[in-house]
Length: 221
Image (cartoon, rainbow, N blue to C red; front, side, top):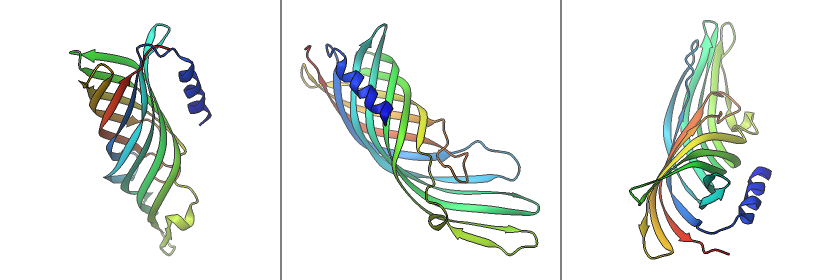
């Protein structure tokens, strides 16, 4: 959160000539994934839905580059089933996850296509502000009785506090007047850090966002 506050202070000190401020919101779809293929590990995931809204400033000129910065709230969910083990035993976790994050987006690569289409490429760093989860983990061990426990009773926390990933945004700008633009948009997020601190720790997130933004051109100060 200190990083987010620091960047917001920097933004407030930048000259606003030629910048655009945007309010946006819409729906998202989350798909958990992993690339583990070692041993007896297996996993399956079901996508979940949610929503996102936030504030962005683009056309920020910093030395030789032009930036787009965004600050948004993300709420998303998903289901998982994962198992691991060997010849002497094994265990399986089934869970439903719901998470809320505050995300800071930094987009150093920005392109204007055919005067109406914006393509922004960058990264997002997120701080979890809440989570809810429910599920069961059960297993067996040769020569021992089977075991099972409820995830809520076993863990005080299930998700990683900080996440990082790559992000790409595509928007079509419909100019209403000299200062107001409506922007239907799509954003793709590819998570690079682990979503959970408990099994299955290898899980990451891919999210799709479809929404609309209202953009206002700022005058020079």
